[in-house]
Amino acid sequence: MIVLEYSIPQMNEVYRIIPDAPTMTVPLRTDEHGAIRIGKTRVLLELVIHAYYMGETPEGIVGSYPSLKTANVYAMIGYYLVNRETGQAL
Image 1 (spheres, one colour):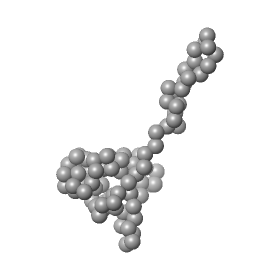
Image 2 (cartoon, rainbow, N blue to C red):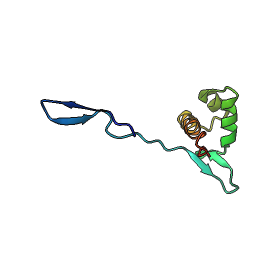
Image 3 (cartoon, helix red, strand yellow):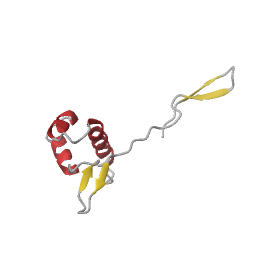
């Protein structure tokens, strides 16, 4: 976590610019057959990742899969992109 701090010499105190790192829940679940789905929908993660790699925007993906929420698609793609290089993407 990166926390930016600054001090005011006269006050001898340190103030945090970012007090707590934000967290985000990634809306993924594994169904009874082992398939990874997004949120409470039946949409497979691999379909969304494929659409993203084919150039589709998160809004376009939601247009193709109306049961998805735009925020969930952004969260899932963000999580995937951050973790794909470490091998923890899914």
